[in-house]
Image (cartoon, rainbow, N blue to C red; front, side, top):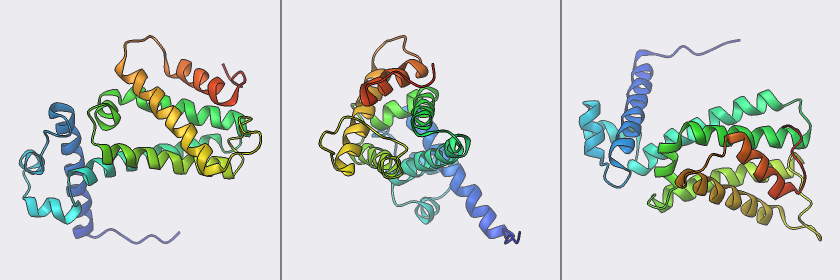
Length: 199
């Protein structure tokens, strides 16, 4: 397999970009999204503002890029691990992984999608998961008996994703003892109207 070697300039750009995202993530947890500024990020990273704008348009983009890259990595990992599973087992495992990720990143996601979150950032996150749900519906990985007669896929994707996001928000913002597996099983039963294939 032929691979193009990364030159010093590209390697430095990647390191700088990663540093900016890591710094923004630290600051959003410390100060919150609205209070964090680009100047805060560049001061903490010891970089100039011009360097920030080489990589990102604004603070929404840097936070979204960090989240999207995490989501992409997680999605690829789960799809590889569940590729040989049947439809409903696979969708159960996909949802379980999503709830586990939320549980492991509770503070960051509460800021990103919580009541005091940035609306545009929250919409980007929801749109990302709507696209995944549409793909799962189109490929038959997710099949629901909710629609008699059939409901258009895009409508169903909005419904399923909206329900999941609202349930996640409630789970994040209220004291409860539900584990990621508990939440997966409850969501599975709510959407698919049957017992989970794995317990």
